[in-house]
Length: 488
Image (cartoon, rainbow, N blue to C red):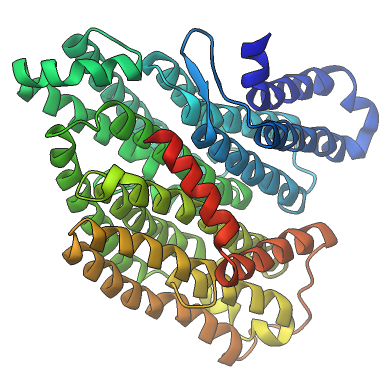
């Protein structure tokens, strides 16, 4: 029972997902036209229960190892569990405004909860086998969610996502197999102990293992050169799913990468080698993501390329972990804080996009012209989110980038920090172009754009959150640093 208690937040998500499928078969049809709303009301219980159980663990200071070392509850896994549960909850809350009266809503919510459970497990998985199982649980659910609308664009995006996802899973599994063959263990703690011996005897094989693992997880993190799926999936998927993927899926990928590379492979001199690899991938991701975002006319596609650039900023922290920062806590803490602030920013941005798109029927940036006159509050909220993504004070994005660039400087990666600053300036062009279009352009159509109360509440909460974190970041900073200390 102790193991069940430790994985309680994950089990709540899975239990509600299962209950949704059963209810859809027997009870929800009785609601008639309210069937979708009934599924939504039941789905909300999953993230709410996970957050409540996770908060109870946090207040009690619970820690422990579950299922003979397959899962570990510590400050690191708890931080990600609460983050993923909150993002999943936000995605569920904004979904009714997008889905309308579409069929199969219970399956939609069940898949989202199952994917969230997989991502939460990724952060706590301390065995290579449980880590891969969690990775597949979340990936398979996401493949279906991307193609949920069953239109041409969604189908194309889903096929690309499935094919590339299958390739990345095979690469990840191959890396795990080589790491197991080299060390004789699947437990991350035992792998770490065996790395020095394996490195002395089979150095090329160990290097191949971490390259394959980086390639496989790079798909989840959406970093160059494993980013090909991002723009099409962001554009073709339902917008709540896009919001979910942009934060939760990315967070899961980085959680798994931190578990493997910091927890198991953070041993000198191997750590120095993968730090160089991630520094190069960071530079490529920032440059390519920002350059491609410059020429986009669809706001979801623009944010897709933007997320590639943002992943490059995250990678600065991962490179800094093994490149000279004492104990690596500054780099790891920077990633965790960045992910927390990024959640407020992206959830707020996509909530506004849902509210506007359902009125104007378009995601084209040109159609956002004059939005400040049609809906001043929505335009202001989106502007603040884009300013935060740029990294301008007093938003959360500014503090996050300041933290991550400081980690790079402390790790003697000054060139990477300078490149990050240059790319942030470059990104201001396409982020602020949207702001300028909304506040200066002439409205393309008359009429007020007003969000539903629920969508407005999520937008307001995210916008206020990114301002609060930007002005008073210390609670989130302290939580991120505690989580980083648990991993190191």
